Amino acid sequence: MHIAIIGAGITGVTTAYELAENGHAVTVFERHGSVAEEASFANAGITAPGFTVPWHAALGWRRLLTRQLATLRRTWPLTGEERAWLRRQRRASAADIRTISQAAMQRLATYSQARLEHVAEQLEYTFDRANGLLILLRTERDRERLQTNLVRLRAAGAACREIDADEARQIEPALHPGTPLAGAIHVPDGEAANCRQFAVIVRDAAEQLGAQFVFGTPVTLDPAHPGQLWAAGQPGRFDAIVLCPGTAAGELLAPLGIRLPLVPIYGYSISAPVAEPVLAPRAALIDRDIAITCMGRRVRVAGLAEIGGQRDKANIAARLLPAWAEQRLYRALTDWFPAAANLTNGVQIWRGARPMLPDGPPVLGASGVPGLWLNLGHGDYGWAMSCGSARIIADLIAGRPPEIDLNGLGVERFR
Image (cartoon, rainbow, N blue to C red):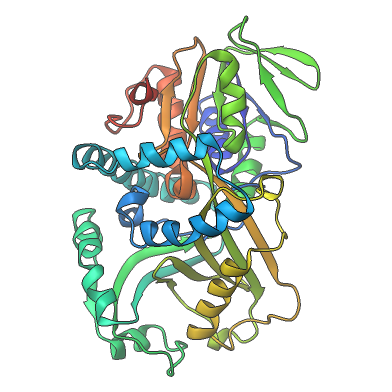
């Protein structure tokens, strides 16, 4: 089959690899100039399945969102679509929906982690990874709040345990001794890895299998002719089309009569050169809603969430951060690793849009339009879910049953 993929983020690139490995002729269309230019560019990199949960179940989501809304309404008012998304998100917090969503995300993330290891072993490439994960507990109140997270991690099969401050500092000796620390949760099997670096590696592998990547080329779908798209003013016919387009999903699907409640939730990161390796983090760390990792020769501080915002700067690297986000990221770094990074030269600032659905899981599978498949809406967890999602799409296109239950992951839940 000749298959088109729209989007070359981490989900699009891994899908291209899986389909090319299955023997299909694959063409990937990307509106940007390279792979992983949007949500995959400089994210936190955490891939631990136990942390893949709907946002309404995640620590700090409501607190952070509530605090930011007043500022957002004064600067960039929320659109009607964003307000409707928040209402749907509140409805998705009902226990019955939350149970289905969380189970679906856990299944997919666990499967994806295994698939990531399989693909990495096949390719025999090395990429930046931080082994082990510490969830830092600044106060006893943090410890109390995280008990539910601990239960969830154990239910997901994570080998995790509570440790005291002394043991946490033994595992991570560069932690600043002057910052109060009540203890930590240690997840020895958790990890963070460089998403964009892996995307470049997988693109290379897909090209070696015959896949073609067409960059700088926005596309549109032809509602009158399933299997046809328009790229650079020229029509193209394909046996199947897979949508992995990030924030462009809505405008691509609307002419086909498919409307998904997908909005961009913006995240932030700062990446700076390591000043002194012995003073930099060894593992991946989470400080409330901020992740601190060492990505090769860079320290990355990433996280936070913003709905709404200046949309013309949504997906471009090296843009200025809002003051509140910049302050929180720098504070987390200086609290824990004040001498780890060179903050005077070579600092990379990133603001990226993470297309998210209100109940949490992505949409995977058939769209209802002949020949059109969906692999989108992963939100915060595109990296954690990408390899598994790609394998599922490849299996479905081949007519094989996927290796996991897809309940809660289909487009039908929004009809």
